[in-house]
Amino acid sequence: MFTDSTETRDVTSWDNSCDPNFFDYYEQQSLSPETIQRFSLVRDKALRLIEAGNSSLGPVLQVADIGCGAGTQCRLWASLGHRVHGLDVNAPLIEVAKRRASEAGLDITFDVGSATSLPYADSSMDVALLPELLEHVANWQDCLNEAARIVRPGGLLYLSTTSWLCPMQQEFNLPLYSWYPGFLKRRYERLAVTTRPEIANHCKYPAVNWFSFYALARYLEKHGFRSMDRFDLIETDNKSLLAKMTVALIRALPPLRFFGHMLTPGSIVFAVKVR
View 1: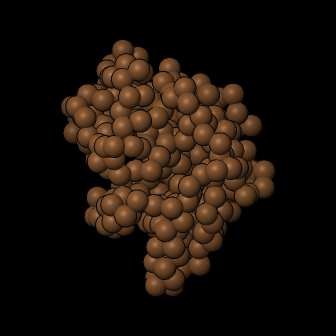
View 2: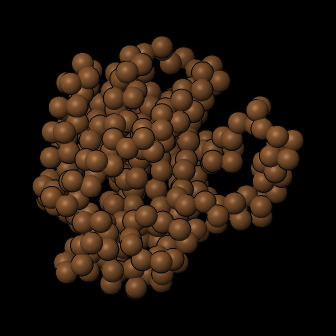
């Protein structure tokens, strides 16, 4: 299931400015070793999936990083020679992304814009990346529809977002927030954009949507995608026998997989466009 805000925003009136506190936090966080390692793992996993799929995609991929922020993920893909297009609603962070790409000698196209109206043609991208984005866009359906639209058959869509299944989360500085009832989430969403911005790390558009892998996979299936979760993607070649048996059981037994999602923060989806 999804849980989402009953309030909607006019996407034509997005505020492209940035709270100085959020800017400072995100500018530093985007260069942290943890962030770089996480995005590197996503890139490498995506490339292995594309290679294993024996698709007709060429060696140089067209990659769209939607909600690219300061461009860390963009630079990681561009450093391997791929053609990268980064987009974010936050104009100051896009300026940081442009500067960092220039300093690294990387040719990356950056745009300020909305994820609900992407400036890319149908089936024009081999890879679409949506890192920590869907939870912040009230009209998440249009956002996901747009991402699905631009991916060509054989291409890959990656997204990471909130999970209502797991009580651990980083969107709000409140304990067990994922499990709060909808009316209470609405209250804290209002506080986050009025009198208590610190509870959502001064984010101009705090999380309003909460997902599960299962619901996201069902939604993407309607757009011709086959989805894989974090347990499908665990590589066991160098794992111990116990670890291999544990992963095999989680994959084979739906209740164990569900319990595994309850223990892991966030929803992660790798989805291949099969039609």
